[in-house]
Image (cartoon, rainbow, N blue to C red; front, side, top):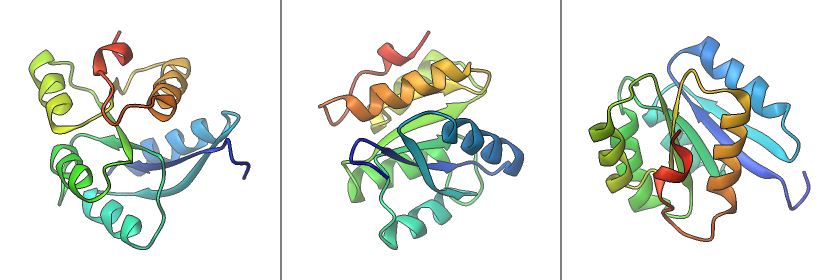
Length: 138
């Protein structure tokens, strides 16, 4: 791992989607997936063990702790980690509420690989703690 490598975590309760996202990201130069989690509880447990990614790609709807609940906890416990929510829902009110809670990006599950890569780079390379979501919405 080089200093320029973006370290990531992926949280989604659908194993096939999670593994596919990991495989996709592993093909991007300068990016490494540290771990996967099946829900927000598992994600937070892994973070507590010292596995701190710079960016987390996280499903909105998960058992135990969903994406919104997990974003709230991440903002309080790990404010430097940037979070990109991934969902199949495209409601402006939902996206705005995630922005208010501290999400750094929002991707639809049908996003192209280029959109995923761009969202990760935008979240990782911003100097702000909470960049605007609008730059990552299309």
